[in-house]
Image 1 (tube, rainbow, N blue to C red):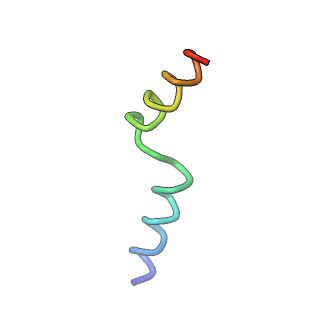
Image 2 (spheres, rainbow, N blue to C red; image 1 turned 135 degrees about the vertical axis):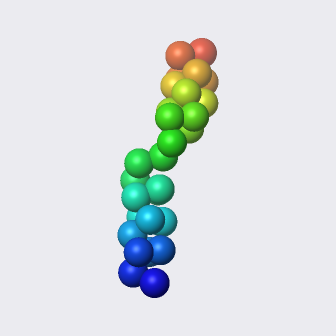
Image 3 (cartoon, helix red, strand yellow; image 1 turned 90 degrees about the vertical axis):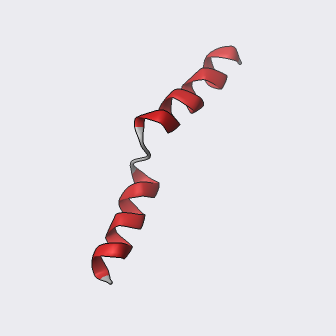
Length: 30
């Protein structure tokens, strides 16, 4: 159980590279 919670926290704090690309794309447009 603790591992699942940690994984969720890490996923929220450190999103995958795909998320950064999506967030960076609109940021550049603005």
